[in-house]
Length: 301
Ligand SMILES: C[S@@+](CC[C@H](N)C(=O)[O-])C[C@H]1O[C@@H](n2cnc3c(N)ncnc32)[C@H](O)[C@@H]1O
Image 1 (cartoon, helix red, strand yellow):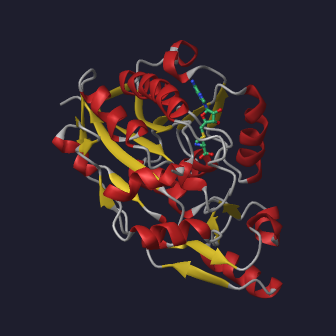
Image 2 (cartoon, helix red, strand yellow; image 1 turned 90 degrees about the vertical axis):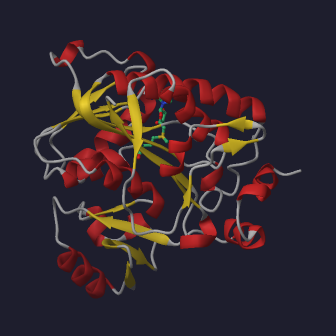
Image 3 (cartoon, rainbow, N blue to C red; image 1 turned 180 degrees about the vertical axis):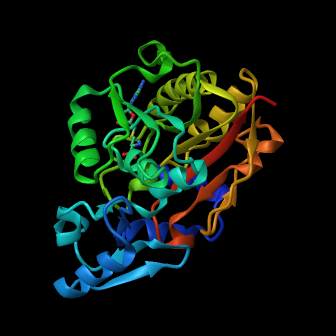
């Protein structure tokens, strides 16, 4: 049995799903509104002979016929190559300018820089990652895209300390955890080569710790967005169910103009909290994207 076959009972039109997973991913960029407007970017693409097309759900997400990093607008930080579904988490969090936001697992910074743009580069984003080697890419991207409201930290997000910042809590947090990456198979055809249930169960333990700490570090009434790029319920709904039982928080709805399926309330005999239906599963055959899971929580009941 291959890794994805276990999802046949929960995915509609499984053959279409399998076929989509085997197709290469479209090349997509996000317009970086800190440095350029959509019009400036599309004019530059036209001048360079790059074909582009806005995605229906967001006109600042453009599908192009060139490699995302090989264009003049990318070189100047006007665009950022970011898988379409990867932009969902920051849109779901929807931070305001001036807020203090924790990005628990931030490298290489696609979502950090998107949060910065949504906040008009005004406020504080603490972009944390435990992997020192990945922080240079995070710094490079924040500099290239002109995001100046970022402080980079190198902590284990399971024990994240607020001490260096002299604040009691963040206004909101983005928790884009390490995962088994099953949903990245279109971008990286070897993504499933080392797949194992042991790995899924191991990484789920880390995910639970990271999400719990982010909730504890967020003010009452603040939002926390949890996302993964995997289909595994053990890393998605089961993590949410575990955290709902232990922390003061609840699932809330959010809007995004892409087709999605609700979070599961049952998987292989385990039952999950009914409210987990408010989470969204994004499948490759529905929107011609990678796979993704994203849930929004509010801290305090
Ligand atoms: C899915 S990637 C994050 C992608 C990033 N949010 C972006 O949009 O560019 C997950 C990240 O979690 C980091 N990580 C793994 N374990 C961690 C931990 N215990 N604490 C903090 N970061 C961790 C990894 O180094 C990796 O960079």
